[in-house]
Length: 220
Image (tube, rainbow, N blue to C red; front, top):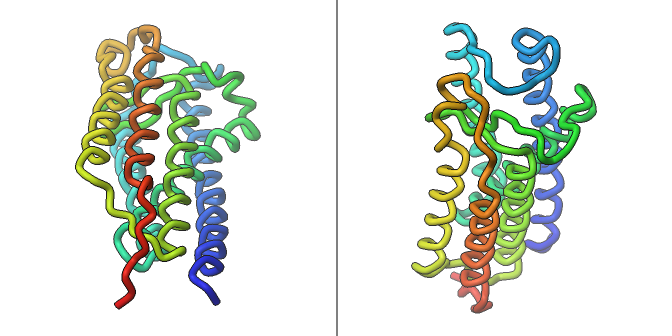
């Protein structure tokens, strides 16, 4: 079996795992919203009990560990494992909202606000932001996997690292900077969509630079 065929088969299994895991994640949110938002999820946020909060924080950390483990077990070297991690994370996050739509008829639109993550501070933003970032992660992950399966190097230059790092910092700022809304139970300020546009352009540029020279990989 060729490396390309092996990668396609593994990609399918990673996607299946991520889709199923997304339903597990969505089902937890169904129960949490039934407890804290019985009349429907909305801002301002409601405080969780300390016992529930610690469980939720630990669950989110465990989620990242599970997605990372899926990527690690699926690949055979560092960049391939990272590619599978990106794919698993992107599919999981995208289908998380698909399952919420199926189970709760929410979100009603891509501009609905959500709590995206809780570590180290609550992340908030419109649903379209994580959806677009998930699509970028999926595209980048599959690109890395297929590139390596075809016997090509993937060795991002310094400029790719800089672009991706700047994009990540801007993205995190866009989600966590509204402290009154995340920690003081106030209504969120309007989301800064230019931040999201810049982030997508920076990630796209970083990946383009990393892949623009298809140098054959030397076999041992």
